[in-house]
Length: 625
Image (cartoon, rainbow, N blue to C red):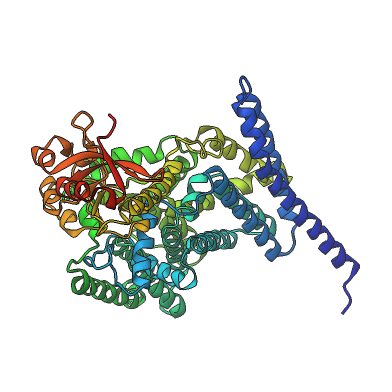
């Protein structure tokens, strides 16, 4: 059947828009370099800011104008996906092209490599079985990547990018379903993706660190969106899918044991309000049974294999006092997360207001709503806001996190955005009525928050790549650790055996050093991880115990051993008389190479090296202060 002239015109128009949008995205990415150069020049930062503001406004205006005119939904999806991909590439370039992840990702890789090679779930080959990672499922997936390549980092990055795109398109489809007409659908999809693209912290944490964050976010978003569309016992397919995702959540991170019950309670409450207790019980019976069975099976497996009911990371990081965890994490984690983050502050205020108003409305209506669209229109934003609040609270129960840019809150960023944009649809509709030009309404709807974000958020595309930013430092720790591991292997490669090494950052070093590595923070060592103590003080790094240290007595300790500069990470153990009696400061130099380092070495190892002299191939000297 020949194409009509009108259809040919539409296709040519769509092709032109598609190509021009790609050029606009490419121009935005390319301009980052010249703008950075202008910003560094004296007296010109304001000029660069002005240029970037104009460029941002024009790019948003053209995106809103163009995406409205794309008639093919699949083509619009490709444009949105390419916009997100462009931001991933920009983050990759700005953060120094990291391809080895953060230090904890290297710990994942160590476990996955050992599992792939048949050594079991161990940190040191031949060592104890220890669950020193936060995700069993991610380790299993990474071990599969080792079947494809001995260096699977690029594969993991591609997988993470795919997870980010899947999460983005899921939320876009959800928001589109809440829209009333084609123009509104195009505008709300554009708004969401623009907000994703202007957040370097979210884009980065979903992809470049090579951790399970992207998978965790996808599962949380999927479970939430499925929960919101289950209306009754007849939705058996969605109930089964929700049960499967609940199992995957439990295998992905330990806090899922709280999350699945939040979801089940939300599912029950929603059904109870609309359809009564009996239908609510029928809906949650299968997911509840599946979750309880999975938790019981997972706990039994941990007891049998690791001898403990929870991951070793829990014992090493989390303080026994719930009051201490909540109080310290609220002030040092949650408030810092909201500080100078415009989108986050707006979203948190929005979901809190919606949830509070919803609770008041339910109390006044005695928890009974009229059936139909009115109930759905109320319950959807109310339930979504409640899930977002749970996502804000759950990290506080474990004392927060020490990762840069608040890793634990990044996975719920899509839900916070969605919960904010649904009520904002009313504002968009009002603008469309007032302005009459829907393209102009969409531009006005977007420009103000985007420009406000660019110049108020503590981490934005202008400063995310600076050397001192916490994100860049995190990648640097992993890279430095790998280099230290190689140096240790080169230094001791000709010795009788590779000595045990006590470390603080345990990922990159262990990835490249085949000898025994002792994690002094206890994440990958059960004796240190289960050491006595209040776990109060340095957040997530309080398991170190000096008595356990001397029981383990690593032959080499990667720390300063000078009493004049004690290591506060290790409780200033250099001032302990036992340490001074057992260890000596020494500078190591591999003869004929540039490989050298200063360490604290156990004196019996030092005496052995001195006896071997030339045979050991190591020059020993006192370190320079």
